[in-house]
Amino acid sequence: MGCREILGEIAYAQGQYAEAEAHFRQELAIVRDLGNRERLSWSYARLGSAILAQDRLDEAVTLLSEALAIAEDCGDLRGIALAHRELGSLAQRQGALETARRHWRTAIGMAWRVQDRARLLVTLDALIGLAKLMAQAGDAERAVEVLTLVRGAARIDHYTETRAAQALAELESRLPKQRFAAAQARGQELELGAVVDAVLADERTAQGRPSKLL
Image 1 (cartoon, one colour):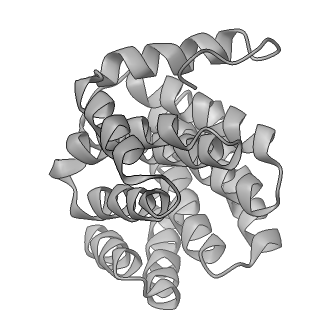
Image 2 (cartoon, rainbow, N blue to C red):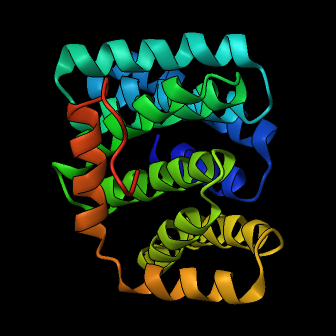
């Protein structure tokens, strides 16, 4: 089971999504037999992410919704965070940007309550998504600030660091050189905890206007 998960994650990080799907399907079959509900939720979320990456949105939403339902039933914060992270990506692909924003804020809220490596990566990944939404909304400099913070914090994980770097490179071409450099400098001064606090404050007042950060 553990080998299939690791092989799937390696394939996913390399962009081999069909191969990742195959590994995650085999992992899911094993986990079903074991009867561990928390691991079952995680397996559904991983498989859903691989299928989402292949643009099979209807199948992905079924798997991710099942992952979320199981995790909520178990009260498993990791599973809830994983499902919301992927549902945010799904909503973004569907053009439902406010829904994506809500999913990513919720993912951060769940992940931040248990601050281990896995939850930190969920938090950073969701922040990348939120930063992209900021750029789409016209606040490219604020997006650069957040992505700079994420890139620094993601040095523990090459895949996440690379995603943040790629998003920064896209924004660099859209901003004058001096403004991009200034935004990066501001981002280097940010604290992850303060940014997360801003996200969570927005989630608590989701019907109001967003905060200065997110």
